[in-house]
Amino acid sequence: MKKGLKLLLAGLTAVALSGCERFEYHPYSIKLDADTDTNTKTIRQLEESGLTTPFKFAFITDTQGALDETAEALDIIRRRGDIDFIIHGGDMTDFGLPKEYLWTCDMLGGCGLPYLAVIGNHDCLANGEDTFDWLFGPENFSLNVGCAHIVGLNTVALEYDYSRPVPDFNFIENDCDAVAAINAETPDSLTHTIVVMHSRPYDEQFNNNVAKPFNYYMTRYPGMDRADGSEGTPLKGFCINGHNHYTDVKDIFDNGILYYQCANMAKRQFFVFTITDDGYEYEVVEF
Image (cartoon, rainbow, N blue to C red; front, side, top):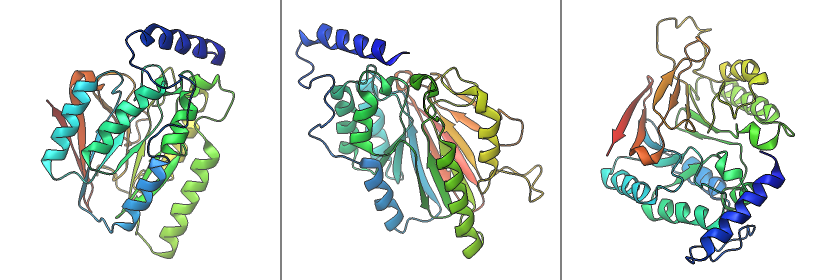
């Protein structure tokens, strides 16, 4: 969607909703009274925490407008007592508006667990991309937790009219090289990779001209290829996405890399992944 049209639609939406006084922020404001650079802070917190395997994280996505369901899901996650952190798969908002971001951030912050987020296509509407950057920090990030390398990527290329590199292969290549350097210095210190994105290859949002190169880079990450002769053994690496509003597990490139797709929050569902030394387990939580 063209940027001018996105701004117009978001502006009209803000006007339409202003009568019920739901928005006290200007729709194009980005400097909000909220925690900023959350992804960067959470990365530092998790990497300095000494968290090792086994660990668990919850994956929620497409919470856009489903405030009651999101609050209930986060309460369940908090009360479980076994979740170490949360990852949001994007589309926190419907219209990219500041107040929508704040609703989600307030709920995530109130849960009391560290959280990370990737950007979704709805989050880019209006000035939403700038708001995301203000609240969460870089749209592409990575961190190491125990033996796992976790990567968050912006994959919603359609929202940028292919005017900038989405996915950002420079970031991915540099990240692959950094992981390889760590494993060269300390062999097998990173054996798992978890790649989080909103839109997966062959979605309409993904730049499918580069779907195959994207897959090539995924296989460079530890746990994401069968070069070690592990045919028939589940890989230790996997991808997670939202966007399509239904649950699915698919080996898109028929090479063993599974893409776990979670339904939108309105369908009252989220995932829990348990990372172990030998691999991982996943659970679909319906509430």
